[in-house]
Image (cartoon, rainbow, N blue to C red; front, side, top):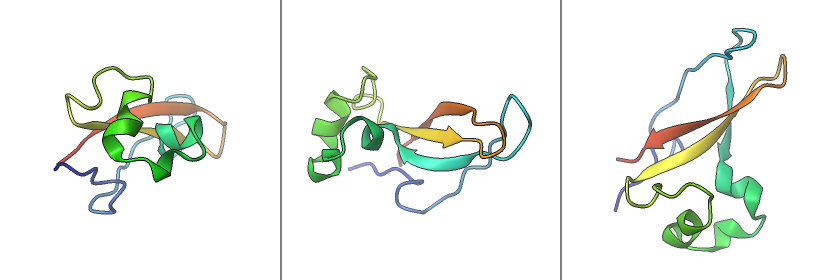
Length: 81
């Protein structure tokens, strides 16, 4: 079973805001924002309803990256390992 290296703190992602150049903060999985009780479900069920059709098949985890300086948000797809 593949696991997201960011969710499990195996790795950190250093990515910068395309608007102002500030380092973006990892705000967690996109699915955590879509369903407040989603973390009670198994990962495959969550991926079926996360709004991205290939997350389960391609073993990717969409994370919301946020800029504290300008408020820019972007979704980054993390390859599970």
